[in-house]
Length: 246
Image (cartoon, rainbow, N blue to C red; front, side, top):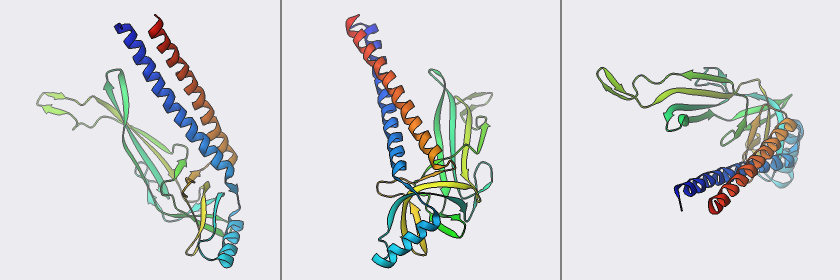
């Protein structure tokens, strides 16, 4: 087998791996879409009433239902790390850009989240939302470009051997008090009311989009990913066949 054939097989392997990753992404998005379809859209007042009736008849802890809720987020705030804005929940991701073998490359060097339980209100009806492990689908709230840290690398007097870092990109997502959001998760009775959180088979989703727009976006992501997986997979097969025929 010549170097040419080895290169073809190597490229085919890379394309096959990428196709597999895109397939997994498509399946994940499809599962989120189907779970969202199964989450009934319920008004907060109706949910509180149903949970109260179930607790009165069967006992505390008996009520569990996967639901979609929409309301205004309220609660104790904290300062978001990048913008300093008051928020109920935040995510900050830091990407490092550096000189690699193939030009400029990136890597995630920081990804943190913060936030405690907050309430969702619609009129007089209130439920508690526990954002732990939530999948949050929000528009970017803040983005900032920073240069490389001057202390990076090795200082040799007049010469500094750098780390190859070209800069950092910091991105922030956040939920602010008073923001209208949609919550998809498992509702259950808790001390003092109803709590919505992730369930054994139901991840918690928080989004500023309404239910139909959110589900359409998930279906579109799944469709795009499966098309990409099919294209990459077909390319991998073609290259592998050429490696054995040429």
